[in-house]
Length: 71
Image (cartoon, rainbow, N blue to C red; front, side):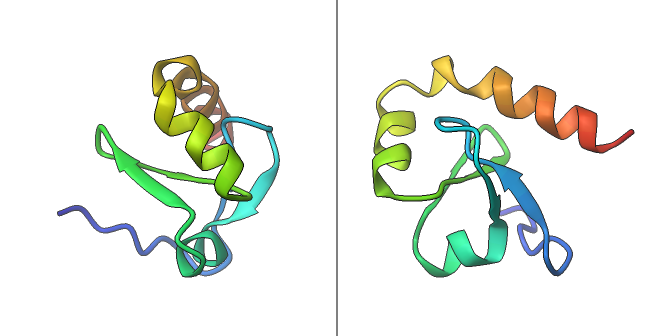
């Protein structure tokens, strides 16, 4: 299992609605999914459910957001 602790206050893009969410808060509320060695975080259960039904539609959005954060 990979380390998903992340830095305090780490943010992540909700791939469904585009909202920036606090990673720790999403974890605390059971609103994260781990897939293909990446942890996805969601603002609410509806977005998480939409992602789970068709993750291929949303992964590229998160990949691009994560890459942009590294610059």
